[in-house]
Length: 225
Image (tube, rainbow, N blue to C red; front, side, top):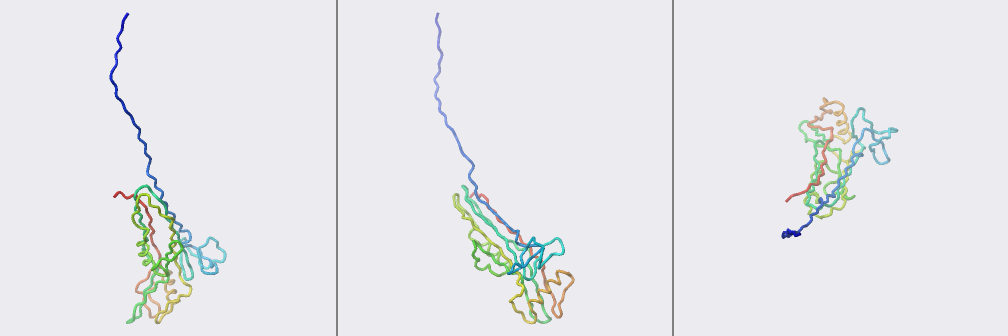
């Protein structure tokens, strides 16, 4: 008996490949629960939004939020994190409406009254140029904050907390010729009640806004270049 064995030359090699998704650890938190309310209650310092309806100092007559002399409110927003990719941080406040009143006597100078004063704090410290001012001024300061911009892969952004505070003083300290702050506040309240209210004694209302509206935007996104 006999037989043959067949064989061939073989050369081989091998390898493996593993990878995981780059880590994305940025977080943003926004709390606007104490910004505006339908009801306000005096807490010994100022009137703040509350769910407690006993002994209210301000109460909306409809399903909407209100503000008035003596009231105050605030909102907080936080950002922190780190990523294994390059990231772009963009933040901004866009004011659409703020309380303002412009009145004038015939032949006299126009008076511009902004009763609601805004303050921006960063990590508990008032931001320069953003204290007791207008919403538009605070927005301009917030847009230029150093946190905004590019972060390289691996950069760590420590938790940064912002607080936006507004207050309408019960007894304003501003002085105007020929008219008091209380009278100006009253004009605003009358106008809110009656859109056809256009004059107070010898004073003509040139411009008025009885509403606050703004948009806060915070975003972190991967940056390719």
